[in-house]
Every structure is written in C-alpha cells, then in structure tokens.
Amino acid sequence: MSARPLPLLALLLALAFGACTEQRDAPRVDEATMAVLGTARALHHEADVYEGAGDFARASQAMERVLALRLPASFAGAEDVRADAWGRLAELDLRRGDPDRALDRVDEALAATRLESVLQARLYMVRGQSLRALADRAAGARDEAAAARRRDEALAALERSIAINERILRRLTPGSAR
Amino acid sequence: MRRVGLAALFVCGCASYSGPRSTAAPPSASPSYSAQSTAREYPVSVGGASGGAQSLQPGLSVAPSTPSYSLQGGVDDGGGDEARREAAITRWEAQLQRGRDELAATATQCRVICMAASNVCTATREICRLTGDLIAGVARDPRCARARSACVDAGRRRDGACPVCPER
Image 1 (cartoon, chains in turn yellow, brown):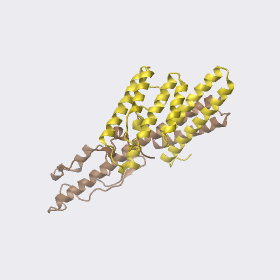
Image 2 (spheres, rainbow over the protein chains, first blue to last red):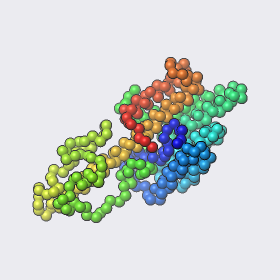
Image 3 (cartoon, rainbow over the protein chains, first blue to last red):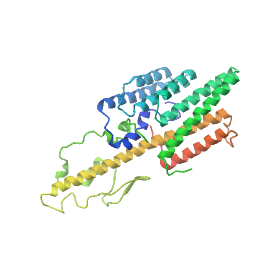
Image 4 (cartoon, each protein chain N blue to C red):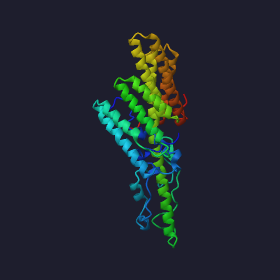
C-alpha cells in the first residue's frame, strides 16, 4: 500500500464532515453527483493498487481521470475532490523523482483552491517537499544560491501548511488548549 | 468546518444521504412492535429506556426524549392511541437518526483531525530537516522549534478529541 504519510486514500472520505454537520440541512447530494463521487472513489482505489505495485505512472493516470470528472458546479465538495486528486498527483510525481512537475501541479492546484482545508494544507506541504527536493538538487549541482532560495521557499510553504492545519485543529478541538 | 458533501455518503451513512424514508406503515401498528425492534435496526443506542442522556462518544450525547408511555398500549386504549404510537415512533426514529448523524460527524471529524495532526508533524520533520535540526534535542533554528511545538500541540489535540484515529 501507499507510503504516503497519511491515509489519504480517499480524502473523498475524510471531509464528509461538512455534510454531516453544518450542512446537515443542505440539499441532499443528488444521484448524479453520487455517481461521480463513486467513480472518484473507485479511481482512488485503483491508484492505491497501482501505487502499491510501484506503478506510479498508472496511479497518476487514475488521478488525472479524477480531475477530468465533471462535478456539478453546485456541489460544494467539488474543490476538495480536485484538491485531493492534485495533491496525490503531486505526491506521485515526487515519488517518481520529478519535483519540477510536482511543483507545477501544486501551484496549479493552489491557484484553484480558495477554501482553507486540510487538503489545501496538504498542497502546501507537498509544495514544500517539492521545493526541498529542488533545493537538494541545486545543492548537488553546487548552485548554493539556488539551493538557499529553494530552501527558504520550502520553509515558507511548510510553515504555511502547519499554520492552516493549526487553525483547523483549533476550530475542531476548541477545548484542547496548549 | 465548512462544506464538503462528499463522502460522508460513502463512509458514515450520514443522514444527508439516507435516501427517502419509506412512507409505508411501519410495524408500529402492531401491538408487538416495541422500541427493541427499532434498536435492532439501528445499532446505535441513544436515550435508552431509562430516559437518561447516554454518552455516544466522549463529548457527544443525545438528550433524552423517550416518550412517557408504552408503545405497547396502556395509557390510552382509545381511538387516538395508534396516532400517538405513530408519533412516538416518529420521534424515536428522528432521535436515532440524530444519533447516527452525530456519530458519523464525529468519525468524519476525527479523520480531519487525525489528518491535520499527522500533516503538521510531517511538515515539522521537513522543516527540521531543512534547518539541520533533524536530531532530537533542542532545536537550534527557531522555525524548527516552532514546528516541533506545533507538532506536540497537534498530537495533544488529536489525542484529546480522537483517541483512536479512524482507519481508512
């Protein structure tokens, strides 16, 4: 199974929270949307299988198919479905040793992600990881200036990821003060 | 937390997608129908027969609203008895559904909490690696120190809210 730091298998799953709480009175998800979500979930499982077998290319293809799914504009979770797929795609790029592509993907995803969420935080984390890999590469090429710049950018992205997750944790666990 | 309608649907059987309720007459019309049969249908026990609030999970409880009369008759054998039974059953069903919703919301919330906490610590490792503070001990770089503090706090919050993280 995946070596990802967290069971993000179907982040599809993880953020259902909204539907079960604040959106309890929101309109029900219609059947067509459910069908698309079911497809997305199946594609995440498919990617798990490929990723577990070390076939990152096919796992990435599965995620690209998630991004190609047409979710109704009215569906509030559409951004999360896409952010999840983008994040996973970028992680797969990193595992394939392609931090440039990973960085491109997360930047594209972040440009399209407006809402603060664990998925957005994850995108920043993957951004930081991509930049760290690029810093390592620059250091290996004895380009110290580029390495230092990439390291600073990586630190900024990682700190931003932590800050987002901290805000989310504070919101969800208000009684657990430091 | 906001939105996201998705997966509750898959995971938690959230009430937001429970499908239309049957309007067919429930077995409640039968005198033998009792709260126990409802409890079998819904594995979540809420507001038991004692009428006391019953904790579902830490910090999650459902207020009692057990009807004060028996579903098996006894208070009123007149013409309104059946209607009252129906009303009682409807209330109980709504209460059970609320319990299911809360459990589902809690489980899904825990996924988010566990994910956020885990990601904080993953980012912390990355930061400390970048600052050269990978080895445990007092961090030389303030960014690593801050991140470690955030990781510890995130772990505390996670443990407090979700002692066991949901599996995938």
